[in-house]
Image (tube, rainbow, N blue to C red):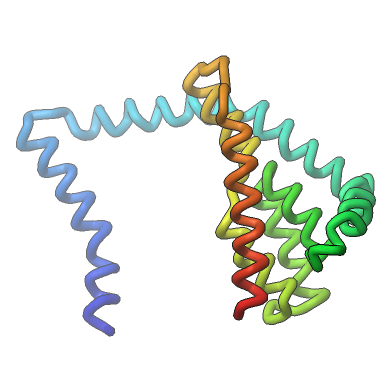
Length: 174
């Protein structure tokens, strides 16, 4: 086991040295290319910052207003015949917008129900089976300047539904 730890610690520096060596062997200006890439990254961050701020403010308003709790109680009554835990509905909704806000909700669920409870296990699995749909779509399409999303949103919503169902089934199976 200790050999695997040693290899995993050495792998990243080896990859970096490999990339630098390949660039130098091809007579590339490695440092200048690195700086140019870093500048492009900063420009991208500046471009997407308004979108990030808007999403974070929107999620904060939803949480603070109590709308998520109201939605959870309404949808919980509808989904009660499936024995779906209504406590997870706010997590599912917030997860589509913000991973960090969803992590905060998961921590709240852990404090209330415990990480080893069915709700805690489901929340943990749900976080790894779903994606921040609206964040990813908005950032990717804004950066790539795509104007027609076509089937992206329906496909992402269907995959999120599949992830939610899988997380509930797996948590109950465990």
